[in-house]
Image (tube, helix red, strand yellow):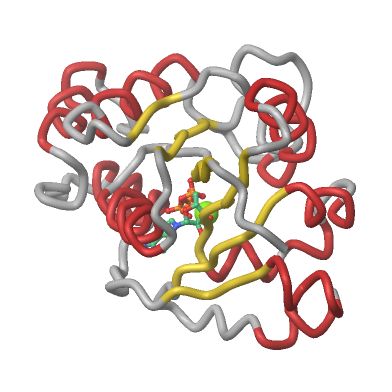
Length: 205
Ligand code: ATP
Ligand code: MG
């Protein structure tokens, strides 16, 4: 199949808060797949985190803008936080396909843990027709994705890829716990994000 003209990365996440693990993975995938840009899309009301308390979207959006502003290839989209109801990736990708046209290839950037959950995602078969998934290795015993690629058969082979990136043992959960217990988050999040968290008194209780 001939390559499409434009390639765009999508980095979806709760980003509560965004950290350098997200940034390193997004940049590695951008360079490997020669992506024109990466759209960071903070989730509005994540379906898999319905029972957990998530920081208001406004803060997560601002931190994502701050974290990505020094990279001219990184952009932030308010698409999901402006939408009511649960954020489903299929709705987001369908909106982007409409916006960018069919001459664009989309690469959804994730960690291995997220790819392992794909079988439970809303309209996943349709989603695999619309975009590629690139899984970055993530420490913490989340396993491989061979069985997931197999599970989706030909679509899995064609659409799900893995990429070896620097494995950073960083998660937003750990960052929130560090703040709660008064430990440092220096160098784990960009400095401007660290300052914003302190200024807005986020994650203290
Ligand atoms: P939480 O601990 O709250 O779940 P998180 O660190 O997993 O936060 P998310 O916003 O849930 O961050 O993740 C968004 C995407 O980034 C997911 O696909 C996740 O797998 C990926 N990701 C997050 N941290 C890393 C990391 N350190 N290495 C590789 N991928 C990561
Ligand atoms: Mg997560």
